[in-house]
Image 1 (cartoon, rainbow, N blue to C red):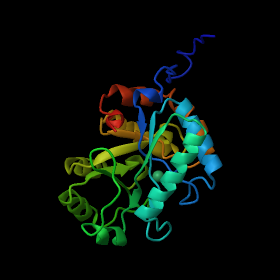
Image 2 (image 1 turned 120 degrees about the horizontal axis):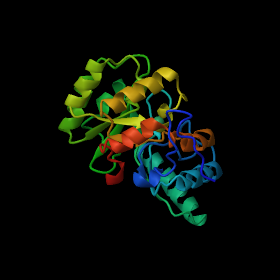
Image 3 (image 1 turned 180 degrees about the vertical axis):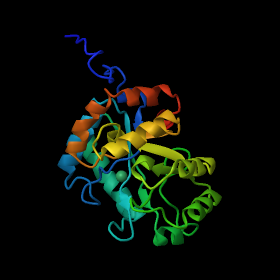
Length: 246
Ligand SMILES: [Fe+2]
């Protein structure tokens, strides 16, 4: 039954803007037992089914690569992807799945630039993440070196780096860094400060990608709520989103 809830909150009834309009999710942790994502293939499949119901046609899953916690190699990620693809096929789920990685920018990562071929997706995009405490001192150098190697950089969840100022965001954007907002930042999942920062970046039209950063069923169960946010409508209407190109 249609509900007249337009006047109750600033969030509209926007269920028509589901994720089929953006087609592809580019940030998730769905390969089991490789990082802080699901432990079993069974849970991975359950999550993927939920993402399919939300409208996604393609998932680019991005396990953490961190020298301290998750020392995932390209081989380990690709072998995990193969098992996941087989399981998804076995369950007759119509979902295209690819893998890349979410590279944590630290000293070890910087040392590998130019020596190792990183996992990428789309038009040679590499997904990177930063410390939540402070920006790496060599961030601009890392960006420069990656770009010299031909990578296009996507910064995961810029809204979660609360130490960044407007000037910092602008500086990164001017260097050609693309910003990927986390879907759950549209609600108060991480914090209200993160949500406000997300809304700010959307208003500034600085967001090029939206990503689920899905780790578990709890995350998967919350995306529906995000689809009803006015900020999601604003982001979608900005015509800046590039997910569909992937
Ligand atoms: Fe992530």
